[in-house]
Length: 99
Ligand SMILES: [Zn+2]
Image (cartoon, rainbow, N blue to C red; front, top):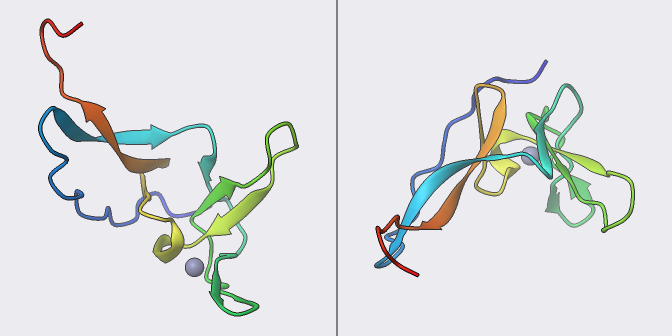
């Protein structure tokens, strides 16, 4: 079983007026890894090889899933919390009467 928690990266910079950063659980193309190794390329032709904590589906649309392991250092800004893969997502700030 993979890690249940990895450190969250800091909240990104000020998103600008009208937007806020929220934590989103990745459901479509990410999942917590049960086993495997990180497949991130670290040098030409060499992969990281650290134990994977999450997996990303890198398949093309319409193809079967292609799960690639990622260690905590190679999750591209994502992290694991309570068994979910999370990311920062930009959302429009809730306003009462826009549109
Ligand atoms: Zn890695």
